[in-house]
Image (cartoon, rainbow, N blue to C red; front, top):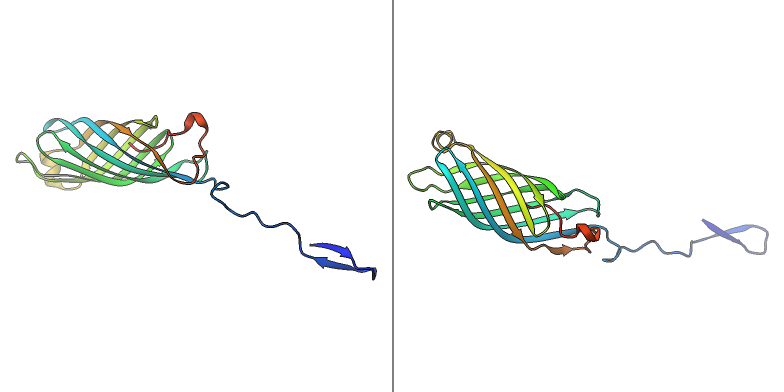
Length: 179
């Protein structure tokens, strides 16, 4: 508390003259990316090789420029053999990261539908994201027929700043998660 003399020899308390810092868009340090993209897959399971093409949409939130990002992802792909594969879940990381979620591959060519756990690690260069992923079936019938799926994916993505101001260092801008 500040004070000043009032002529009576005593001190009279006064309020500080400064104002508390107001949070504005330019003073925020948190930011987030929304990234749509093309997703290409080369992998396989017990039935043989699989190739896929589709899309991915991810969102990553960063509390500040040095923070590990946390976010969500969703994927939709068409596999060779006519099956659709869909996945969604959480992701965290920066240039390197992990995804954990639920995957579902449609029944096709006499094979059962495969609900499973999606686990992936990724390396992101902003517009190009490489990933190794595995999907473990949650259903014993699918496990017997198809087994675990393993795949390499390549995503070509376009990151957009969804909120905040991109606080990354210039050489890191655009390098974030989402495989």
